Length: 114
Image (cartoon, rainbow, N blue to C red):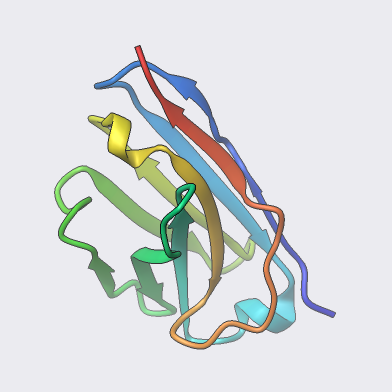
């Protein structure tokens, strides 16, 4: 029943930008809060941004001022605009419900390197 499809990742230079997109099933998107998580090799998965159905947002300190999360409740899609990217942003990015997740999509790889 659960379907989460992330896209938009890629290889970019430091200081570059990417826009990630998450298409969610109606069932999981009906949950109030959706978020973007990331996991780098050897590190734990962390929540970097989340958004409620009413568009209230939260950001991790490491991305605040650089990332913007948004959602389209009609298209059942969550977005993550990432600007001023740094090498430490390199990770696989996933979307899911917050704070309790049920299942994971395949994620999308973001690599920031010169």
